[in-house]
Image (cartoon, rainbow, N blue to C red; front, side, top):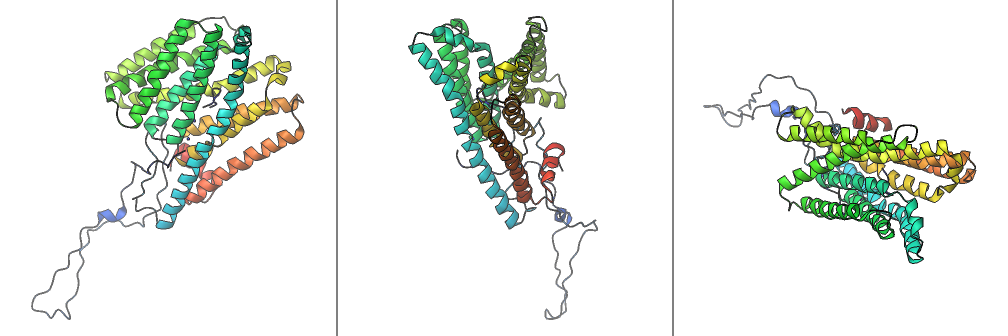
Length: 409
C-alpha cells in the first residue's frame, strides 16, 4: 500500500469496541436467595445459597478474535467495559491503542514527502513550457492509484480509523494534484480529467459526510457499489497490462471483470446471494484497493528484471520513504486485528520499499551502509510492533499476535 500513490492516520484514537464479546461463565448462576428461617434467632440463622447445577470453569482472559476480511469494517476490536480484562491489562491496551494511533498519524509525513518531489518537478516543467516532460508520467497509472486511495478512504471511514482516513485523503489530494498537472500539459484528455474531478469531489464529500453520520445510507450504498465495480474492473486490467508486449494489448480482462462485478453487486443488493456471499462482495472494494497497491511493486520488480539499467533511475530516498510510511502503519493494523490492512502495509514495506532497495544494492546503486541501516531498522521495527502488541494483550509470544490476526483465537 503506497501513496504515490502509497496507501493509509492524528487525533484521539477511536473508541474501543468488540461486538464479539463472549458469555461470562458466571452468568449461569441464578440470583442468590437468602431465606430467613422462622422461629430461629437471627443470631444463629444460617445463610443458604441455592445454585443451579452447572459446569463451572474459571473465566479465561479473553483474547481478541480475528477481524474477518468480511467483517473488517467494525471499529476497534475491544470493549473497554469487558470484564474479561483486569484494570492493568485495560490500561496497557489503551496505551498501545493511543501509541499505534500516533504512529499511524506520523505516517503522513513520509507519504507527503514521497509525493512532493513529483509535484514540484511537474510545476517547474509547466512553468518552463516543457509540457512534453509530463508525458513520461502515465495518467492511467495515477488514476488507478487515485481509485485505490478513494476505495481505502471509504473502507477506513466506515471502520472509524481517523488517522488512516487522513493518510488516504492526503493520497487522494496529492495524486489529484499530479493528475491536474498532467491535464494542464495535455497528457490527460479533458473528458477523462473532468470525470475524474467529479469522482474525487463526490468521493471526498461522501466519505466525510458518512464519517460524521450525516449521509443517507442509500447514497453510501450506491458509492460502495461504485467503488467495488471500479476496483474489480481496474485490477485485472492493470495486472494484464503489466506484461504487455509479452501478452496481447487488450482491454478484454477489464471488460470481463466489469461484467462480473456488476452482476455480483446487483445480485448482492437484491438478495440473490447467501449471507456469506453478500459479505464477500461488500468486502471486495477494500481488498481490490489493497491488491492494486500491492501490484505496484510487482510491476516495478518486473520492470527491474527486464531493464536492470533502469534501477539507477530509482530514488533510494523514495523507496526509504515508502518503506517508512507503510511501516508506521503496521502496529496499528496489528492492534485493530485488520488482516487486509496488515497485509497491505507489510507488503508495501517489505516488497516495495525494502525489495527495491535490495535490487538497488545488488546493482551497486546504493551503499552497503545505507542498505544495512534500512534493513536493520525495518526488522527491528517489525519486531517491536509484534512484541509490544503481544505484551499489551498478554500473549506469551510475539508470534501469538500473528496467529490471532490470521486465525483468530
